[in-house]
Picture 1 (tube, rainbow over the protein chains, first blue to last red):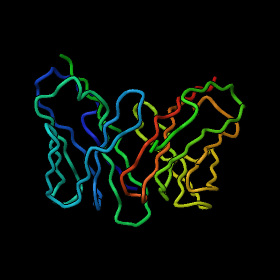
Picture 2 (picture 1 turned 90 degrees about the vertical axis):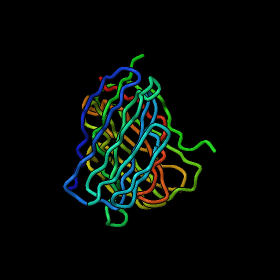
Picture 3 (picture 1 turned 90 degrees about the horizontal axis):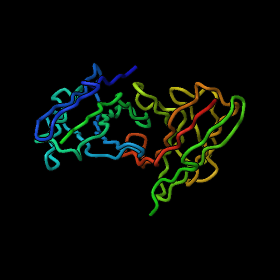
Picture 4 (picture 1 turned 180 degrees about the horizontal axis):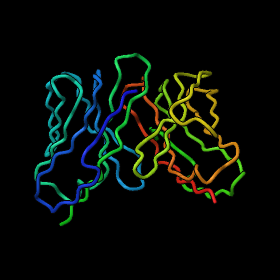
Length: 112
Length: 112
C-alpha cells in the first residue's frame, strides 16, 4: 500500500516567517500534486511536479520534487495571513487508472 | 462553467435514515470520485467511476452506494446512516484518475 506522510501536521507562525512542509513516501510516484484547502471549501490544485529534481515556483511558494520521485517539499517565503489553510500533497501511481494517494495534510495558520 | 456542484451543503440525519448526496460536473470529465474528510484522517476515497456505467470501490466503501448513469452526475447514497458516517463529503472530477482533481464545495453531514 502506498502511503504519503506529511509533516508537520500543524504549523502556526507569524506573518513574514518562512516555512517548509514535507511530503514523504517509500514509494515512487509518476507525479505529485499540491493542493490548498480553505475552511468550508474543497481543495484547489496549486501545482503538479512530474520530473525528479523539478522545482516550480508560484509567487512566494516553491515546490520541489525529490530526485527519486519519492518525496516533495513546499517552501513558503514571507508567509502572509492569506496563506492560512490546509496543504495536501497527492501522489500519482505509475499504474494507469489508479486513484491519487493523498497525504493527511498540514494545517497552516499565519497570524498578523 | 459551474465546475463541480454538490447538494446539500449541510445535512443532519438520524441513525438509520437514508439519503443521497448529489454531485454534478459540467466539464465532461470521465473520472469522478467521492471522498470523506475527517480530522486527522485526510481525504479517504469512498467510491470512484471511470465513466458512465462503471463504478468501483475505494478505501472506505462500506455503507455507501454509487451509480453513474450519465457523465455529469455521480450521486452517493447512504443506505442506513450511522454516527460513524458523520463527516465532510467531497465529490471530485478529473480527466483521469491521476489528473488534476476538481473538487466540489463539500457536504457537511451529521448523523445523530
